[in-house]
Length: 339
Image (cartoon, rainbow, N blue to C red; front, side, top):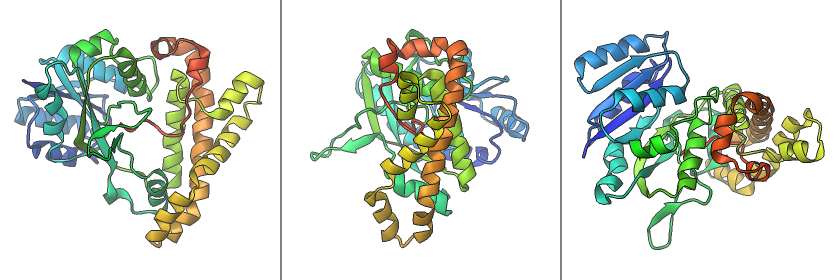
């Protein structure tokens, strides 16, 4: 059985050398590597071209596009095999990641989608904001282990592009990734379609990728603004304050503020504080309230703007996962889907 690895990138020279090294150290190698580069300007394109010359498995396409379009281009025009393994270039890969992500396909012939795992890259937890997020969030893996040692998906988990594999047939039947979203949430929509489709899902809890975290508060808040914008475009993971805005006329100016306050009230917990106390990390404790309020405020602000754009430009993405407005407003989160 052969597998195609698909990824997209833009200006990844900071992470490309290590990502390539991680890939070359995999205990099982992909049979081909399809990369769509969105016209990088930092030397990434040139480095990828050199890699393609050195390694016949590497197929490169350079085209200005968003990640969803890049993934669709790779699957539709660049790969030779039916089973697609997907990840992002900025991640670190466990040496057994590829071997583990394809294992369910080889173990059960009817598996159509495989969900892998992820963890925070501990090497990037070097500032108080980064550590504060880690104490607050805890384990980001989509799996929990039962008392009998068996891994199962956490309730509400949605597969994301960080560590996932799927058949080209599933990709085609679901319409590929939604290209009408600006930057984010395409894999969240695609993942929701997978969960709604009833296709056979295999679990790969040992297929771990490591997610680098930011260093400055402003970087975390910018990330959450973008997550909020994408989720607003797709009309998913709706903040509670936005529901009040839509249903009861709460002025839109209060949505970011209330979302920030709600983020503090929900996530500034004894559990998160005790994690920091065990490490004597008082700097992280001090930054937690500011971190959380800024995270929620940024998400809420992004959601408001994204929702307005999505109402006219992203109806295709919304139609994939929504049947009614009530369902659209049924979940809440201030985090992007990480797996």
